[in-house]
Length: 327
Ligand SMILES: Nc1ncnc2c1ncn2[C@@H]1O[C@H](COP(=O)(O)OP(=O)(O)O)[C@@H](O)[C@H]1O
Ligand SMILES: [Mg+2]
Image 1 (cartoon, rainbow, N blue to C red):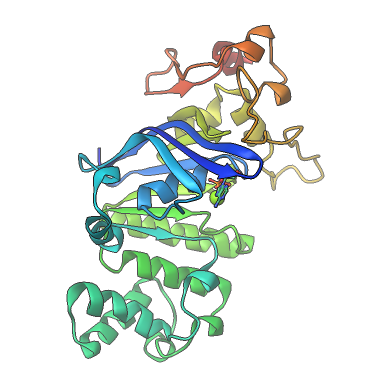
Image 2 (image 1 turned 45 degrees about the vertical axis):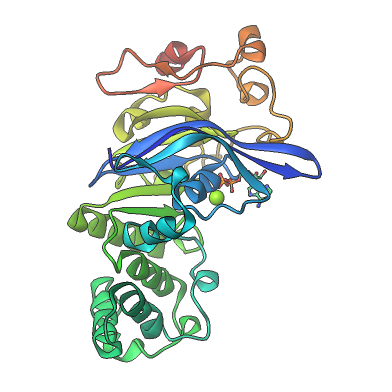
């Protein structure tokens, strides 16, 4: 396994109390594989990713348990200096909002070039040539001219391509893309997602794709981990999940995908709100919103049961995963 997160726990000390943002998350991704991490806003997707990247704000964040194994070594045990070497060269991150992640006072050519002057000791001239090459690679038209422009002179979709180029510059083994297309309109979303998937295949990278939108991952992900209140509630190969979810929360998410072929149909959204993370409900955290909840759900935290009816490796943290699967 290229990256393996094991039983990660992260909390935030807030005026409201201790927010338990990540409560025992385990997931992994191999070289050449795409893991989609899915869940509503506030489920701990980004905090988990920030912990993997080593960019979690500490304080207020605190890692209370777990391991982040990258090619077998625990990144949480590295000194900041070693950690910095891993970041950028071995793993890189793409964020939702390119405008606030790119430096507004540097040209994109200088920013892309910096990756090579700083990390690879290249001359400015060679670095500039590399920048143009990267912009071509992410299919920004007229790269040779546009390399002299500033981030605000690009459209949202083009800026996102520049972020992808930055992330790929040093050919990392792992890329984490945190809602990389959420801020874009639908047609541009698809183009950027296709580009990301294509580069991932070409470079045989591991990709963790974070999104709240099941619709965008169907074509690109190999497997899915669904998060709720800081836990993984379902994990499965992507096709299995679309065929039959084994958790009522996943079912709710699936039914919330707008279908272009069913115009006028009312959009199903899961009733209620995700819990306050300083006061996660006892038992299954999803029980107050769950249409299938029974007494046991209000008292007993469901472990990640192995979904034994599947050929593939599959898990569901629902006491009634069988009923859900056949429901
Ligand atoms: N800097 C922070 N300070 C305090 N609490 C935070 C901070 N970042 C995240 N959290 C808490 O962690 C929860 C999960 O956040 P996040 O991982 O960003 O969710 P998402 O699944 O939307 O990416 C938030 O709802 C919040 O309670
Ligand atoms: Mg997030």
